[in-house]
Image (cartoon, rainbow, N blue to C red; front, top):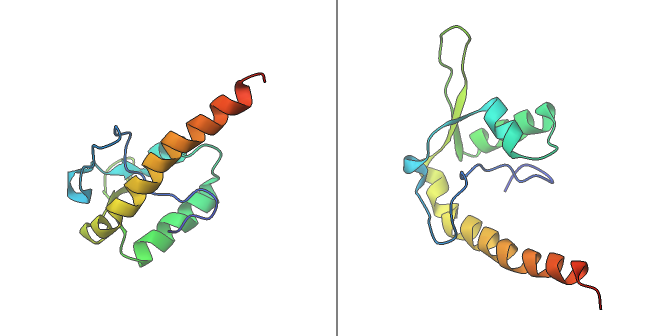
Length: 107
């Protein structure tokens, strides 16, 4: 996936086992995505979104209103990555939490 250290793909906050498809996701605007990815710079996020758009994983729409809005959404093409994305997320939730618990315990 793209995004360097951050691996930017916004799949909303969903519970393990709950896997909405790309077409069920609501679009997210740049600042929403920036807030959701802890510590990411605007440049890294922008470059990551450009890369994901080039790979047809993200669509960018420019909405002409005041102020101009630029929502990003996952494409149907990105649906094929869902099993991998969710498997990695679920593994991380299970195993990284275990590792954090072990590091907090006093032996």
